[in-house]
Image 1 (tube, helix red, strand yellow):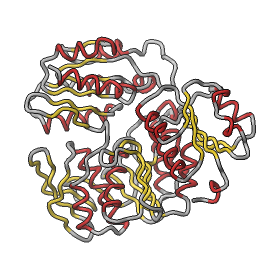
Image 2 (tube, rainbow, N blue to C red):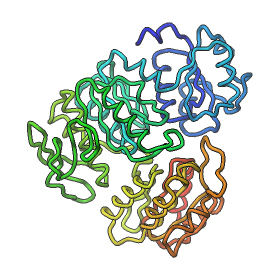
Image 3 (cartoon, helix red, strand yellow):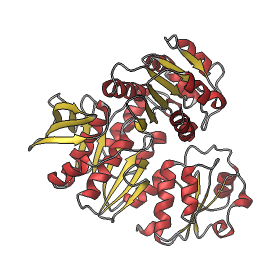
Image 4 (cartoon, rainbow, N blue to C red):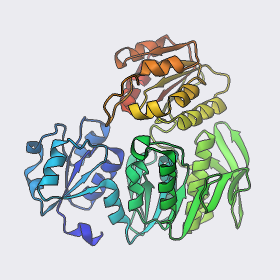
Length: 449
């Protein structure tokens, strides 16, 4: 463990239920630290943390912080940038001499001095990171991995196999990834996003360029991005290139050409060209790390996916239900491509919960275009997360732009009822807000038909 963290007894998390924050909480609990935290609402993640003996409360109240964690000398406070500046507990620790760090700073401290593989990109980083961690673990590397989603293979967002190498998802939000010191890095995509933070798309691009320059040994870059590194792609002559791609019963089979070899007949059990690219990235990073090719091929075949990333909830001849975290038009397009490729000529109902007023405003016409590709649409209210409403930016406003006959605004209260009215053979829930909390209810209702 880094000496900066060795003398800290207590770690207090403000926003402990976040996917990245909860991985850190698990990590410190495993190291024997006292861990506690606050979050806005109880979820499956907070429940799982409580099962590990971590104290969590759900009211922004300094009096709810456990007594042991009120000692500034012995407590490190970790917070997420999603917490509002008006937060009472955050203001208390800021004004009372506590050591306070953002999640990314703590990741930077943990990874400093350990060989680090980092995956960045506006899309694809969570799945790529999860595949990479699985590949390294299964091929014998002593790896610790911090994931931005729950790996289906481990039912966790943290893998603890040793401390020779760290795998980390490098988040561009709030320029967090500039706290990291990767030895091998990948950039999957650089589409405009988080314009509430960056204001202009070129500012986002500049931060990716700066991140890329931090890679000490190798940089992998998706073909077409304005960065210099080893390129990867599909049938495009990239340095790491998928060739001879075919589909057999929902599984991709492909050959991977690298600068030094041709690896034949790799199998990937995830649908969609975007996931094929994710797999190529992870495989290439593992090869550059030095993992044995045969072990990697076997590991890739056994990768099951990430929860809420094209996650099959129901898969029968009569009905398909897929849940996905997509919250940007490019991600919705990728989801749509995968559904059409794997389930051609079937009627598709999309249920979408927009995430953030600012993102909805910034990409409204792109959202409308991507949602118009489906056959039917149920649209929930915008999930605000950290934001206040923006006048005129509503789901009704977005729905008007969608070019589709069969479209409707729904609430959570009548969501299941509206889904059951549909004749669609493929149903997909989409979004990064709390729509994920509805998935098991929707699934149960569909199975009960």
